Length: 112
Length: 113
Figure 1 (cartoon, rainbow over the protein chains, first blue to last red):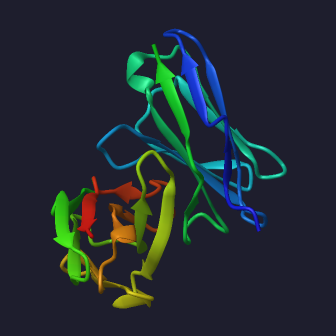
Figure 2 (figure 1 turned 30 degrees about the vertical axis):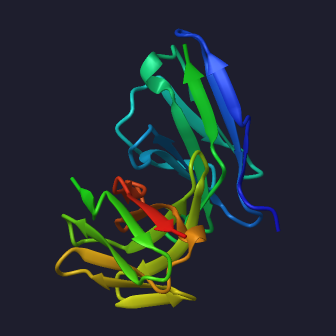
C-alpha cells in the first residue's frame, strides 16, 4: 500500500506570495495533521483534521489555513509568506487522529 | 504547556554498542508516546508507539519504555549498526488530539563503522 504522499517536493517562493501544499493520506485513514519543522528543531503542530472537520490548531498565525476534502486528502495554505516560513512541512495521517501517526516525505519550502 | 526534552542532543558510538536515548515530558497526562526516526532532509518514520497504559514496546533491536508518572521514556537500541545513524525524535499527545503531537528536538545519532 502507498504511504502518505505530499506534493510538491520542493518549492521556492518570494516574500508576500501565497503557497498551497497538498497531502494524500494512507488509504482508509480519516485524519490528517500538518507540522512545520525548521532546521535543528522538532516538528511543530499546525492543524489536525478528522472527517473533514478541524479538530485542533497549533500556535500559528491566521495566515495559515487548511482544509480536508471528501476523499480525506488535505491542503495547507499559507498567505503573505515571510522569510521565517521557510521550513520542511510535514503531513501525517492516522486512522482516528489519536492513534499511530504516519508521516509523509515533506515539502521543503524556501521563501526568498 | 507540554514540553519534551531529549538527552543527549547528539551521540556518536562505535558499531555494535548498545545505547539508550532519553526523553522526558513535563505533563504526565499523555494519551500515548511515539518514537520516530528521521534521516537528513526526509520525513519521519514511526518506530514504536506506547499507549499511556503500557510500560514498554519492542520491535526487533528496539525497545521503548514508558514511566508516565515520572514523565520519562527511553529508547534502547541493541547491537547498533551504521544504518541506525539518524535523528531520533520522541513525541507525546494528549487525549482529544486537539494539540497534536508535541516533539522534542531529537537526538542526533552517529554509529561509527
